[in-house]
Amino acid sequence: MTDQDATATPVFPPGRYGRRRAERRRRPWLTVLVGALVMVASAGIGYRLYKQYGDPEHSPRILSESERTADHVTIRFEVRSDGHNPSVCIVRARAQDGLVVGSAEVPVPAGKRSVQTYTLVTRERAFVVDIPKCRAA
Image (cartoon, rainbow, N blue to C red; front, side):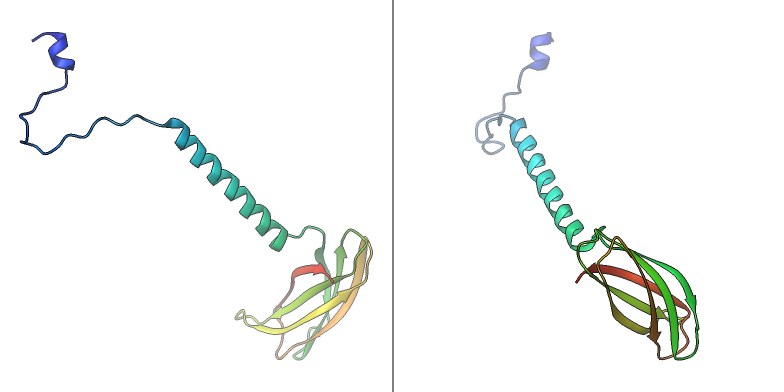
């Protein structure tokens, strides 16, 4: 057997194994194009979600808690923002089992750093208080 015979395509009897398809040409540009479109779409979706949920313009921070009783909790918090627009922050209190026992939207005036004190009314004693989100008013 020669090297030519080993690399040659086998010859099948006509009609025995069905119709043979012609070998298709590879299209690497199509794979690259589809990959680029997927990347552009992913970047667009990521940007849209970041603008909708990841607003860094209003960042809240709880400074202290006081007067934690069975029906209210008083918190002091700051909001850092661009300074041009007022904000609205969602203040939330949770019980030890994780249920929300009090929630409120607190208006915050415009300013680069605004410190607020707010008394949140609760249905039962709050275990933890957090500020999940602040947004432009």
